[in-house]
Image 1 (cartoon, one colour):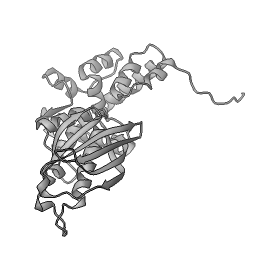
Image 2 (cartoon, one colour):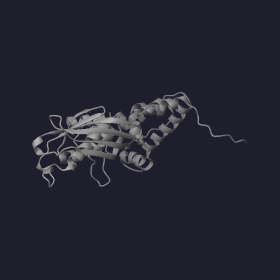
Image 3 (tube, helix red, strand yellow):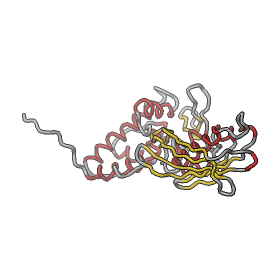
Image 4 (cartoon, one colour):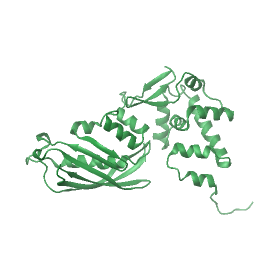
Length: 296
């Protein structure tokens, strides 16, 4: 027996797959390869998905609990049923059969009755298939309450799709947006614009709008600009924000706009810049933000 230095395997298909941002498309690519990487991936993925389905309802009645457990507990980018949806339920079942892998009866029944995905959107809410009731239901949060539709919708949509649905009213605005009464009026790739009409409710003890309003407006616009660059399932949180207050905001100036645009998006960190202006283009505050990117 002889020892040698460890060598990284040189597999061309894996090197190509690493260039694909979306996990679903990356998996599809590797699964389709006629090489040892494809064979190993087909064995692991198809057996893992089939096993997860066979454990329902043994370990839980709700498929969302399986997905959450693997995402939260093991840092998976997708749970098995989310992954199954990304690959296509019907197509994946056919591939499992071709590889002589047993599919849980409830999954075959779900597909036979016209339900083609484990998750789908319903009026801005992400709902999931319930094998016991043979229909779709909303998930339950840890406290027993139904999760906010905005949260589940964001995991199902890309950031840009989500922001567009917020703007059109298909997805309700966040609680903070409703509390502060600011509105998303423009959104495109790498850009977001919010408006607000300040009034006395936003004043501090000095008789001018509290600096927290400008900070909240900038934080929202900067984050949403970065959000437009995120694929489905990838989210962000603010690491740092720097604000410069140029002049006081008062009710008399009327509606102000916060225009934000992305400066840089990397694998783990993104930055954006924004400005608060009145109707004449006069500047009231400007700032930058750095956000950390991660899978939800």
